[in-house]
Image 1: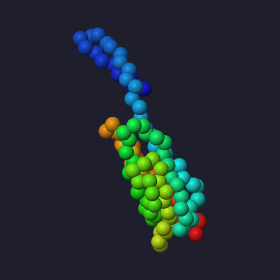
Image 2: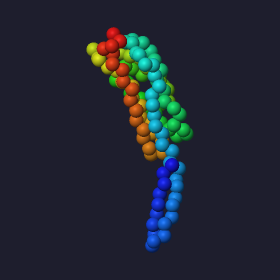
Image 3: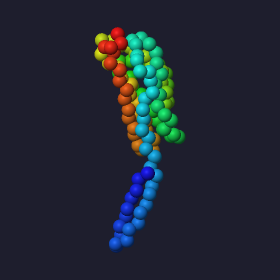
Image 4: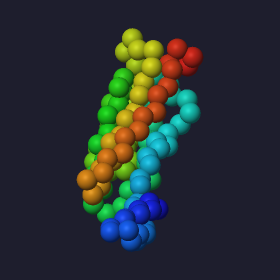
Length: 106
C-alpha cells in the first residue's frame, strides 16, 4: 500500500492506492549436477504476465514463456550456473536470479 498526501491551497487530502508489487523468487533445487535435469519456477504473477527465462551454463528444455521451466545443467568448463527470469505485467518488470557454484559439486 502506498500513501499519498496532496496539498492544494492549504487543504490536504490523503489518498491511498493499493499497488500490487510482484517480487519474484526462483524455486529450484539447492544442489545441481552436470548433465542432470531440473525444474525452476516462480509464483504466478497474475493474468497477462509474461515470463522470459535464461540459463547460463545450461539449456532450457521446456516451458519458456511460462512460470515454470525444465532445464539441464550443461557445465562446459564453467565454475557456476545461473537461472534468470524476467517477469512482466502491466508495464512493471521484476527480475530474479539463482546461481550455483559448481566447483563444490563436481
